[in-house]
Length: 339
Image 1 (cartoon, one colour):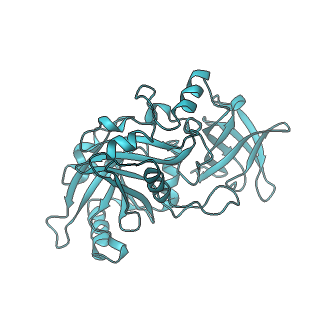
Image 2: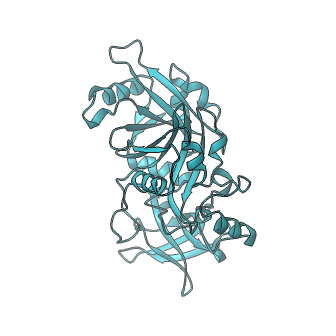
């Protein structure tokens, strides 16, 4: 039972009667059919089929809410920090909105998110326990909640199923925005309540270890605007091939018809005396066949779990490669299975 307080998060609300239709025209998931409280993972795409953002889209009473990786991340390698994806998506929505009633509102700087695992949710006193039992690969839900009702500091918000961790996870977004100068005691009240039911606060390192274990890419770390959605290898969860036309759909459909992209994100298991850095290249002989994007410690000494891109020759489980860490240590890498 754990919880993690996220230092930043993308929260973009899109208001208006045409919000779902406009978003549906710009993303890979069939969000126009969502009913209030339902959600889907999606890639927001540009006219070339490249990834403007990677979010979970939830239907709200007055539009949509998009949730994903926050702006406090750095780009891969030596590139400058990426902008807040909420800012990029909002600008993208504005660019393709003519007379339709659709207004994006970036709330990333106003709201704070706490991620809890399914075991913690099952111990909570409200509807959180109900949706913790229902996680499916493509079907997501959100519900309002109030916790700590029997304490001196109850707190309210909305909970969202997110496909970030194995076994299910819920993102609690507390209203209002806690550490942004509004109601500063709400975050501490939430932490106190979660601790009181037996959950332990974990670090961001643990958050990323769990999402790497679940092969979930973090936008700005594992993916950016240079990537095609199918390179994330989340077609089943985030791409509809039957919804009809949307921006970039021609490129995505062509890739589907061809059968495979030339590179995609895979899970690498590593053996190395020191932790490899993001951006480390992996080779098969003299040929570069992979590049690490996220690396996490494992319980076993000198073993690490990573996400990273692999060339088509190394998509299969058990594919092997080698690399060098920054201190010159040798890296033995294998795709997706224990060595």
